[in-house]
Image (cartoon, rainbow, N blue to C red; front, side):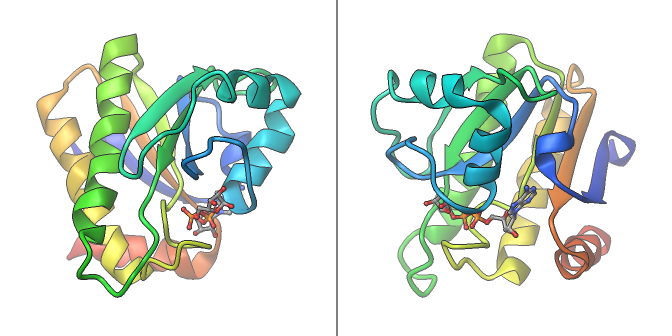
Length: 169
Ligand code: AR6
């Protein structure tokens, strides 16, 4: 199972996969961080498709094509804004990962790359987010043998170390 899970440091917009996941906001209208990078790399057609989808509630996900990205699809997941940790943030973050995998199953996708959802602008502490992300990824890999590869792409070396430590724990 763990051989189908990899942690790398890099830019998710460069990843070739059936899908990359975007840490989006509910408007699906683009933004900063990884969302901005994905929209810039995919081109304006991505925004046009996103705007046909309406709002996406926190914890849920929507799928589009990848346009000029090397990835075939983008799964836009809306993570929770950190509000101190007692407002359902953990469950909403887990729900992003679960809903992303549900969309993969529905569309017959086998390889996916995730960023560290909610741990940038949305302020979710990465030390708390990493075990939640990895738990949901492992659960999906166990349940779904058709999943070939799940990559978590960490932007900084520090973030990569946090995930590596959580994976070993
Ligand atoms: N590749 C991989 N990871 C990246 C990249 C990249 N190109 N760029 C940034 N990261 P964030 P959030 C990392 O803020 O916290 C947007 O404005 C970044 O270092 O992108 O879920 C949306 O529109 C961090 O570890 O997403 C929303 O309004 C992680 O990606 C809001 O930000 C997530 O940081 C969402 O906030």
